[in-house]
Length: 113
Length: 112
Image (cartoon, rainbow over all chains, first blue to last red; front, side, top):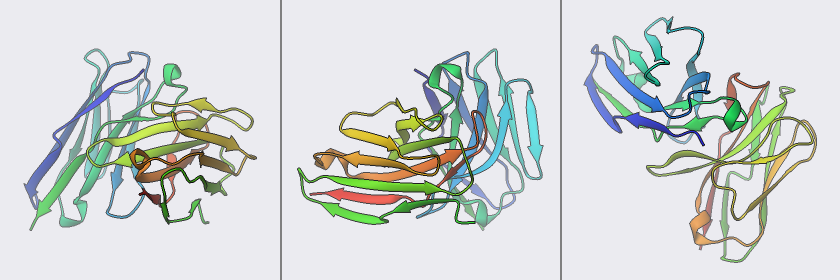
């Protein structure tokens, strides 16, 4: 099945700096790559997603890049704010997994003022 | 809109007891999922239902059963709970394949 690896497991940045989280996946048939943010005591919420027919997508301070050849994708958060502190998960889905999401193990992001 | 509703929010079971976790969505979504979340392990897929009337195993199905009761409801049953099933369980739904999955608030289950 699909195997998604995520790095780093923890990340600490100063407010205003950028944060980058990287993921790799194993199944070349995967074609949907969402990123979720989870705050303490809550369920994950989608923040951005990308499909395999594009290489980059941006939404205000958040961007995602996808390299299908290398089978990796990254989340970029610019001008970080304390409210960005949370756990972030990448995921991959495709026909070989029944289109169910396979998640990475998460990155705990801390933004310090 | 309530979105995805899970009940109960908290539960303590003794080893060997059974229970059913309930999940309902009001978004008319076709696909529904059950995940478990353990520290350092991320979210692992237990079972999913791509559409009403179908269910499939995920990464960690052992010890669990599911029922897609109708389009709205997808329940997860533990027939004989074990301490290894202590976890936070999340139900999710999506309109169809490769679309946003919406998650419930989770059920924190402790098996003693």
